[in-house]
Length: 356
Image (cartoon, rainbow, N blue to C red):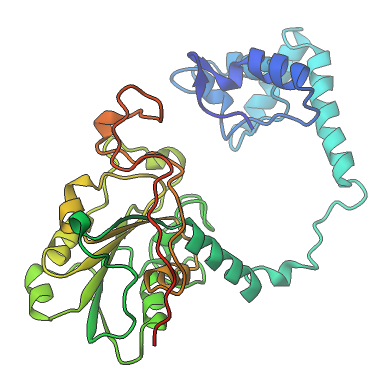
């Protein structure tokens, strides 16, 4: 699939040098190239401003199958006219058809056009969920564990008097999963799919004698007056996909910062960030005792509790530089101005412990 992006100012959907000359001819790619959703429309600015030209440029660049969700009759009419007027050659059409048919023959779609559903009942099985839970454990990155060299907060004790769980993402399966989950943009809440939220995972993990108090966004007086042993704050981004997630500030969603302030200024706290990318966290670091990047853990929030409470150790490393502010971006390893909050490959480790 061709991306929406541009290369040296040229839209990839119109880039014959890369799609045909490089991918198909030099790399000998024998599959077929498909456009993104209304991708050829975006060859022009504004999109669809000159659709006939977009069809010519996209198909001429080497796109074999065009994703046209709505105005497909317009596409068929324009493409037919371009071929009849010899603007797009029949050889280009034959190449596209040949590539699509080749893939279908290799996949056996003409012999067996329908999917084999014999294994469908295994989707979401306990075995699959255990593997997903393991992936969560291994992908968590511990960014801070103790203020300014103080003793580590993690792993947390399972047996204590009373703990606070707070934050917009603590009991929100949809936020854990993010976009492209059941629906395009995903959605908040716990009605989207089946799984375990971080709050549920904590309740499953602590000692039965430990009281777990959940308050999504407590005020400072509530935190100070309850004599919590420690707190777990889970905040981050709402679900999104593609351009709906574009952000010029990359901040934690409100009331996340307020929750961090109210909780972490009053009690020892670990902040778990649920996000699809690094977000601005530097302003809150001085009040946070431990900080965990959980990315988008999906349905198996139990994997987070596994590591917070020491059944398993933290082993994950940053696959992306974590910036201090968005003003530093773009920033990559090797840049003269490379001054990250947490560098590429960073990640503290802990050892698993045995607890009662």
